Amino acid sequence: MKEKNFKTLYEIAKVLNSIEEIEPLLKRIMDIATEAIEAERGFILLKDNGDLSVKIARKIKEGDIYDFSKSIVNLCLEKNEPLIVRDFKKDERFKNTESAIFKSIKSALCVPLRYKGETIGAIYVDKKAGSPFSSEDLEFMEAFSELAALSLKNTIIKENLLNENIFMMQELGRVYGIPKIVGRSEKMKKIFKLLAKVIPSSSPVLIEGESGTGKELIARMIHFASPRARKRFVAINVSALPENLLESELFGYKKGAFTGAVSDKEGLFSIADGGTLFLDEILEMPLNLQAKILRVIETKEFIPLGDTKIKKVDVRIIAATNKNLFEEVKRGNFREDLYYRLNVIYIKLPPLRERKEDIPLLVSYFIQKLKRKTGKNIKGISKEALEILMDYDYPGNVRELNNIIERAFILCEGEEIKKEDIIINESRKVKIKTGFVTLEEYIKNYVLRVIKDCKDNKTKAAKILGVSRRWLYYKLKQWGIDTK
Image (cartoon, rainbow, N blue to C red; front, side, top):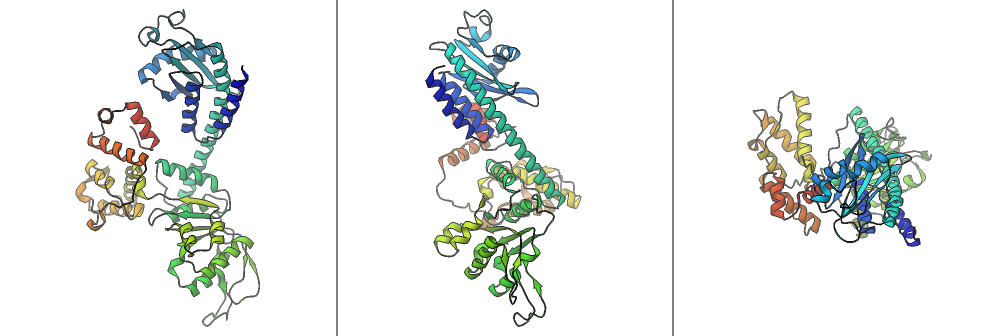
C-alpha cells in the first residue's frame, strides 16, 4: 500500500476513535468509504440481534439495497472476504443481474466488517461512471474496514453499557418510588447518557433549567442510582428560608448558641453524611454562606453554630438554579470560586418547548400513571386534543403538562381524552418569544408543520418539501421523532 494511504489510515483512525455515538460514527465511515475511493453510492450493514440490517445508506433506494444484499453482499459475507466487481457486464458472476442490466452499475466493492474473527457487518460501495475500482482501492478498503469494525464494536459496547446503566437507573428509581424520567428526543438522550456516566462519581453537580423541567427529579435519580443510595437524600430550597435560619438549618447548632437554641440541633450536612445534599435555588444563597459552602466542599468539614469542634462529613452536593449561574457570577451575585467548585458536572435541562417530540410520550406516561392511581379506564387521547398540546409552549414545562393532563383526566367522561377536556389558561397561550432560532431549528419546525398539514403522510410531505423520503426519515430520526 502506498505511504500516502498509510498516512490517510492513521488520520482516519484518530477521527473514528474520537466519535462516541453510533449514528455519527456510521455517517463518518460512510463518508470516508465513498470519498476515499471516489464511490458514488453505498451502504453499511450491521448485525442487530443476529440479523443483518441496513444502518446507513448513501444515494441508494431501499429496494436496490435488498437486490444487492441478495447477490454481492451475500457472496462477500458467505466467503467472509472482500469482493470487487471491476465491470459488471464482463464479470461472469454478476453480468446477468438486475444491477448490471437495469441499474447501470459499472463497478462495485464490498468488504466485511470483522471484529476478533467475528463478522459484524459489511460496507458496500459502487459507481456508475468513471474508472472502475482498482486493486489499490480494494486494499485500502480492507485496511479501512478493520479500523471501522473496531470503532463500531467499541462504540456499540459503550452504548450497551450506557443503556444498561440507564435501565438500572430507572429501575432503582422505581424501587425508591421516584417518577420515571421520560423522553426520547435527542436532547434527553444526551442527558440520559451523561447521567449514566456521572452517577457512580461523588463529584458536585450543577443543574440548570427553567422551573418545572425536573431538576429535583434528576437530583434524586442521581442519588438513588449511585453507591450513596443507602444513605440519605436531603433537599432544601435555599430561597424558602431567611438567612439566619438557613445557616442553622444547614450546619446545625449547639444548645445556647443563640436565643431560642434550647437544645442541640443537627444540621442538614450532618443528616446527609454519606449521602447527597440537594441545594435548590442555589443562587438565592447569601454571599457569606456561599463561602461556608465552599469550605465544606473543599475540606469536607464545618463547625456548627456555637460549637468549637470540627465535624467531618462526606456529602455529595447537587445544586440547582433556574438562572444562568455564570451570568450571575459576572454580575457579582454569586461567588466565582464556588461556581467552579459546583460546576464539576454540568447538566442543562431543556424546556419542554425545545423537545416537543417528547410530549406524546409524556402524555401517555401521565395517563397510565393516573389510571393506576385512580382505576379510571381512560385508554388514551384524541388526535385533536394532542394537537392542542403540541401547539402550546408550556411556560411551566413538564410540571404544567402534568397538571393539564391530570385536569383533563378528571374531566374526561369517555375512554379517550377529547379536545374539550384540555383546558389551558388563556393568558398563558401566547407563544414564548425566544429570539432568533438556528437554521436547523427553523428547518425542523417547518418540516414538522408540513408533515402535520399533510396529516402525517410523509410521502406527500416529502414531495411538498422537495426532498426524498429517505432524507425526511433521516432528519426525523436525527431529531428523535418516531417515524412509525
